[in-house]
Length: 202
Image 1 (spheres, helix red, strand yellow):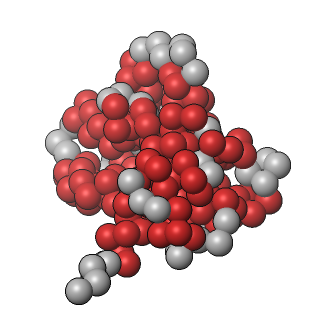
Image 2 (image 1 turned 180 degrees about the vertical axis):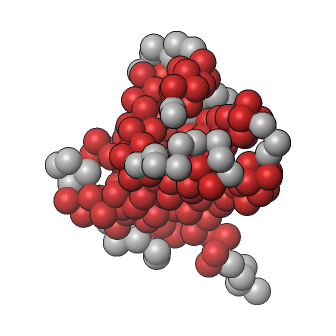
């Protein structure tokens, strides 16, 4: 009797494999053959779902955004609810830092995500098909950052006239810059720098 293959499980296994290859060896290394080998599949099993390298890479970028979003939003609502009712400024800053630090490579999982985010973002400069997906990765971060600042301002932890759009852009740039430095060998005191930025907000 032929083995029944669950398409969702198979695509998840392929996603695991392509993200692992990209994180370890870069975008160009994620050939259909390399991904099939990583997943322990025949190359025909990968070709069944993806026609070529570009389609596979686009899928990987979409899957990366989906996974980061699920991970971050798993506790975003809890932290934002606590932030909205926090009793003092120090506690609001601590909660803000806790959530924003989800975008910093502070453990193995977040470091891998940071490597992948920057890999796809840089590749989008010369691979137009990746550009909308790189932009979506940035929008996902910007949504969380904006929500943190908006909630903190509403709770009285930030100045009422704070320019949310401007400060969100600054914070995203800081998080991107810190994570890029970290994954390219200059980690530095990531949380201390994030905390200093938050403490400097009016």
